[in-house]
Length: 230
Ligand SMILES: *Cc1c(COP(=O)(O)O)cnc(C)c1O
Image 1: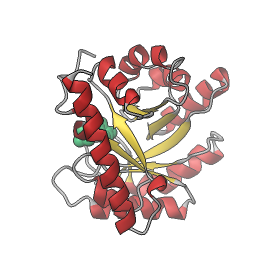
Image 2: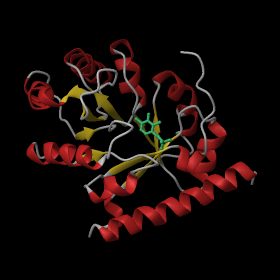
Image 3: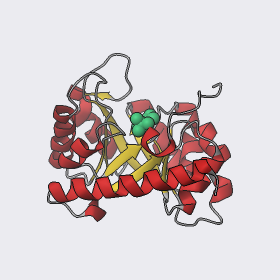
Image 4: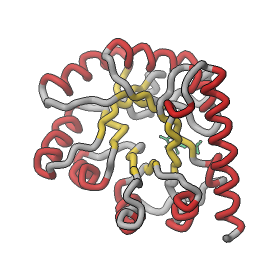
């Protein structure tokens, strides 16, 4: 095993322990939280090392990068689950539906329409999460807080989309807990089972607030290589 692969294995072992401990502190079953390994910008070898260490759930930001990395791994890893966690362009909706098991970044009416259309054409139904811009940050993707309720209703009533849950990325410089709490409240109000929140720096707080999916990149794979073009 290469040194890089050994480091990924060790990191995963340590993170699984920390997730289990955070669950116990929150009176939750450790199996109630999925670790999503965010492999963006990392090479296929890093994904293979994680797979060899028993990791099956992965997150990628870009459809194109994920299309190159994941389909070749599927035949030998039937349990593999790919989640799209980056901003999704409407013209990539069909590729995303073909490729992904979950799309966590549904955040506007045109994308809802495009995904509904793509799901009909592809006869494939990835799980859908609505991304909420809990900090109402102008530069950030996600539905503004005040529009979350009507947007969830639009997805359901107008486009017939079953929404599985919510996702957020809290503002970088703030205590993330109020943002996690807000997302959990919104999910409870709409009876949505899935809460994708928490990254390498704050996943334990997210678990305390009810996260069902924590998205960890650098804590598993180390500092990311620079993104490629596009
Ligand atoms: C990159 C990324 C992550 C992982 O971030 P780390 O800090 O490396 O754990 C999680 N979620 C989203 C949406 C990301 O883009």
